[in-house]
Length: 448
Image (tube, rainbow, N blue to C red; front, side, top):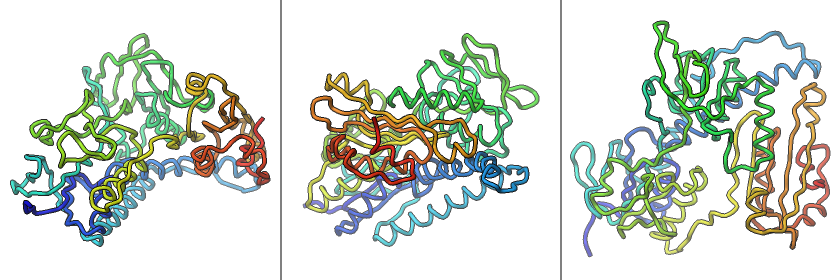
């Protein structure tokens, strides 16, 4: 048998790569991980975690207003962006240290260099050093897509949003997906004037029409300006540092920041994959089978670089399945059905399973149950903002095939309900469960 420097060489220390490395090392494999930026990946360093901390910070804008209705004599409060920004980045540093420590404690070697694949069992580091490995795992994630047009270089992405020197007075956000809507809510709560530009009139494509329509209504009420059926013509940087944005079918707008949230592209360029025979699709995603193996037997891939479901928990599961299969002697595949997801907008959305439209197309006979209500806290706060819970069931069997929610704490509530959908429970099982009162979650067992 050939001798290699490592049993496993992982390129990318994000969620999937870290999990695969730690578990493989625990199984006794000699593991090295190459990371050119920081250990932790998109989620920890420039994605889910710092974004959620900004969401928490943004919520205080409404909480402080609501507190007065609950008897708290809250003075007028000013928001300091630099304080929140620096505290969030400090927590990112903390997590980067924890992820690094976790890899080291597992026995994996961390190599802080860019690595490229130069053979089925060979990797070349930026320093020029070549190493060999029995298996190579590509876990390089994805990066924000930036459209090309005159002046697009003046825009930023979600990566840079966490490092802004100051809070923009006016920000234009391009896109209709979850990143666009999350940052629109964040900056709006901080007091920025927010314009959302989208090529179509549909936001959050893939989510149930009822909850995405409700978010649009609430967002408009909060003062977010949506410009639909608009595309960029050009951006001009003015002498005062502001940006003048020209859009199709719209009057030019002047803003302080333009942020692109127009999708994410797999990080597969410049890795030497094509040269060694690793196949990729038209979007650059590494093609893999159910066991995460690429077209080259010794090279695997997990996470966003495969562009299956770009969610951190999915990447973690793929990394775990890879390690269990290749080094643990316990072959596993990831089940991509009924994966819950959330949009941390204001208010948040959470969903699992089929939308109503998907269910009607697939099942034919469908029954839908809803609860459209105002949360108790919103009633006393005199906040006219309604939550919406929706359950989609197989019309023949009563099996719950989808749950879709928008309202306070929707993601926290949905996680437990997602177990029921995954388990194939029926509407009757929800009906037979006693409500936990008074709570918003009780609406799930009271749907009509």
